[in-house]
Structure formats: C-alpha cells, structure tokens
Image (tube, rainbow over all chains, first blue to last red; front, side):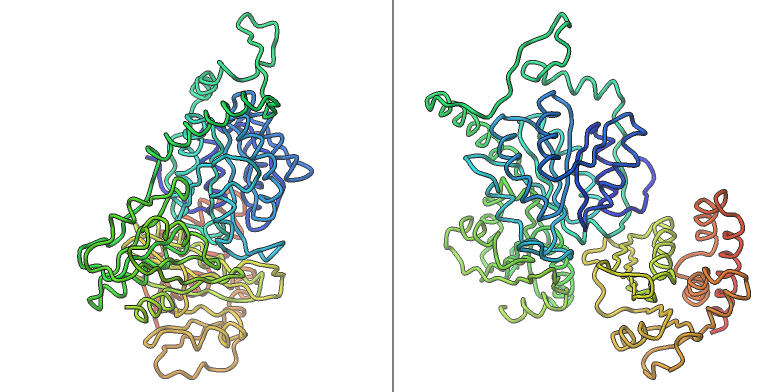
Length: 360
Length: 180
C-alpha cells in the first residue's frame, strides 16, 4: 500500500476512480461536489482520458449512456438538484442494462435547497428516481477512505451486473479532509482487458475490424411480450444482487444492547461518537450501519436485535426515509424511534447521546 | 489521546491552512485526523473556520462543538468560539486583532502579536504560521521537524522565499509557546 495522503472526499473519489480505470467523465459543476469535477478536469487529460464539462447535467448523463454503450468505465457526479436532472438518463441506462457509476454529494433540499450536508435523497436513491421498474446499487460511505474505496467497488459491481451504481455521499464527506490510502492504479493493459468483458454486447466504433459485431443498445421495446422478458431479466439480476451484495458494518453489537441504532454515512459517524460516550457510562448501544442502501441489510438488522433491545432508533439527516426500510426489516417486532435534522443541519454527538438517554 | 480544535479567522488569514498543516503533520506521525471546513457562500473578509480532530484511535464524529483548543486570528472568532471551549482548555489568540481578554478562568489564554510578527518577518501572509508555532511550542502535539518537512515539500521549489518566511514565523511562535 502506498503512503497515506490527506485529501478531501471529493478529490479522493476522483483519484480513486482514475486508478480504477475510469477514462471517461462527464459532469456539470455544483457545490458541494465541485472539487470532484475540478480534480477530474486537471487529472483526466494526464492519464489520456476524456473530460467534458457538459452544458447541463442532462447532457452529462446522456454522454455517460453513450460511453457506457461502448463498454468503457464511465462516471458522472453531481449534487442533489443535479442528480434529479439525471434521473431520466439513469432510467434509460438501467433499461438498456448498461454499467455506469454516478456520485451524488448530497446537499440540503428540496428544490435548490442549500449546500450543506444532508441525507434527503435516500428515497430517490433507493427507489430509483426515474420511471420504470429498475434498481440501482446504492453505496453510502461514512469516511473519506471509504468514499475512495467505493470507486473501484462501484466500477466492479457496475461491470459485473451491468447496472448503475450510485455512490450516495454528502457535503460533509465531500468537503472533509482525512487520511486516504489508495489502491494501486490499473495499468492501461488492465483497463483494456476490463473493456473486453463487454465485447459480446457493446458497440464497436470501427466497422472494418474483423471481429466487428452489430449491436443495438436501446431501452425502447414496443412489443409487451418482449419488454416483459427484458424486465424479468432485470429482475433476475436484482434478485442475485439482493442475495450477494449486501454490505453493512456492525458497531458495538452485543447481547447487552438496550437500544439498536440504524444510521448510514455521516449520521452513523456521529452516532458512533455518542455510543462511545454512553459506553463509558456503562450503557450498551449497538449500531448497524448499512453500507449498501440498496440492497438493504434487513436480515442484519433483524439479527442484531438481541434479547435486551427495547427499541430501535433510526438516525438520519432528513425527515425519516430509511426508517421505512428499518420498519420493514424488523417486521413490527419493536417500536422504531427516529432522530432527524433537515435543511443541511447536522446533529451533534451530544444531541444524539441526549436522544438515546431520553428513550433508554 | 484525542484533541479537538477549531481554527478561526477572517477569510484569507489562513485559519484553514493552520488546520491543514497540523492535520498533515499529525497524520505523518501516525495519528488519525479529520479536517472539516466551514464552507458556504463565504468571501474574503468574511469568517472562515475549520474543525480539526486528532486522535490515536479512529475518529468517529468529525464535528467539534466544544473544542479543547481554539486558535483565534481575529475578534469575531473569540466572540463566537471562546465561550464553547471546554473547561480546562486553551485559547491561542492574535493579540493584534483580539484586544479584549476572553475572561474565562477555566481556560488558559495565550496572546501573541501574530500580525506584527508576520509584518516584521516581511510577509503578512504568515501570521497563521505564528499560531501553528505556538501550538507546537505549547503542546508538542506535533513535531516542528514534521511540519518543516511538509512545508519544504510543498513550498520548497515553488516559493523558497515564502518557505523561509513560514519557517521563521513557526519558530517565533514556537518560542512564545514554549515560554507560556
């Protein structure tokens, strides 16, 4: 492993994406995500890739659609309002069963909202913000290191399942600097190899090549019987992902737990601090931190309910969105309490501690 | 060991940079660090601050609501964050721009004429580095040598004159810190 460097989350994910073999990146600037596009604009030409600052977010996602159809590792990024604009494209890419990585550095909403960290895009991310029956794998980092590590993971998952992988970060993780260790950069030969796995379906630019195949990439199918088969095929993929790709972290889970917290990303970090403080006072609180928001770690939450757990507490920087998935996971076995902040405000460890003490 | 601090000043005074070099040095010395800037529609002359956490263990929350230490480069920083310092904490302030004492008996206060020292050295830009020196001299949180090495790497070729001014400022601050 290389030495640690001190980097902002937004820069770290960009560097990690380049190392993972991303040679095409299209985006439009927006705070608190702009360091990502800035880094790409500087570094992408140095690795021989293509960077385009598009005229809009919609143009960027459609460039991703085209590039992905050529079987290349491609990424776009934005923050909440920009991600809303990309939803049509994400639905098309999903319908055409193409791999792509999308990063959302979430800010306060709805509408233009503000530029502070928030988690108000959980529903949009996990339910599919565009139209139609589709799923995106959703990864939620809670540190700069994890944010960086998610770039190679996201590309690998996208390639494996030909699916859109959405990395759901937030303004705090994007703006913060922490130590990061990067995985070694892929060589040009390795990147070339990666592209070959898509040869059976992707578009080939050069018709004169001897192994040229004629492929049509499309999300339109007017025959309902054919479309039905296509969507059922997508479903098979989603069922497979739900079986094999669930990721989560257990923190302080023990038979003594009186309360089980569920939180992701920034909210989870703050909850951990509160749990550490309460531990010093002899109180045992557990935390399940979903790392994949879809597929959701329902079984892990259910299994973490030890005999002494009286209540579940879901903590989010929104009005309560993931709480729906938590309720579904525990099937009404226990009451589910909620702590939230909106508008780009972030609860402090002290406030979380007070909330836990109140419901203990 | 876990230290939470806030560095604060006018935009352009270099408060965020103090935190950056402190974090960088602590990281090189094997600590976990987090550097969380205030960000927003801010401008030169407005306030800018950064929350830094340095710890032996992995850092959970990067938020700092009650700092162990405060570095205040101007008066609004003392007014805003002074009352939040933990009891038994430390405030390092720029006496050229913070005329009034904080007046808390449970907080140790160190005042250094950072702006004047920087002017004497020949670059008003390096006033932030005086405070970094005070932290090093007073607390030993990071070694001077680590910071010097980082600065040489970053500024050495690009701007040798500014590098020397920075090192002078840190050394001057370190002396003040050691005496306090």
